[in-house]
Image 1 (cartoon, one colour):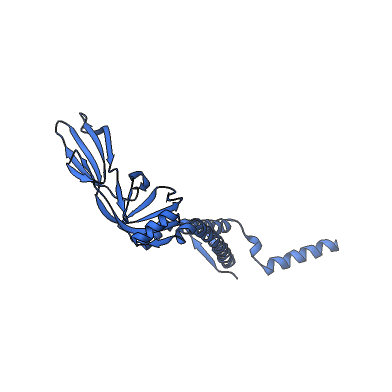
Image 2 (cartoon, helix red, strand yellow):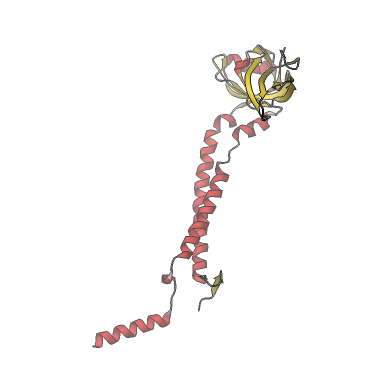
Length: 248
């Protein structure tokens, strides 16, 4: 006879066979998940192929040669610096700045009243000079400075330092950058490569797939699974009833 497990004051019971089937279903779902995750991993590697095959350049002359010949994608380590522009709110030279002019209302809430920004026209990298729009600064941290002007006015200033070590990911074609080069602030080439290829697709899939597997097992248990039971006594009575009916 099967042993029953009672939960929630006997409102639900799970037989041994149902538990075994749940384990089998969950194991099957995991096997399917392994196959699907391997497909996702291969697709992810395909998307990151250009990063994984990119060159690693540290020498100035090697970079200039690659830039002129359009060698393709590369992670280039070096120092990015500029002559700088003067930020009027703080009187400090920086690579670029963004100023939000804010005013305070009667409730003490600050609101933007205007905005201004400026970039250093020339940036120096690996012995070459570039315009600022040749680079993507989205990964560069900007220092925030709040300057009080008095009478309910202030400037919120974001500045980028005049020089810093970084790794630049660039695609070099036809003697230039095919697109703005991505700056990875204070990172080595390997650290930049890991950031560029970082993906949560497989982790997200396994979280969702495990939850789906648990739900499938729970739904299976909620059904009346009498077909799993093999009660020989009931089967014997059914046979006897059938024989009696045929004799009549």
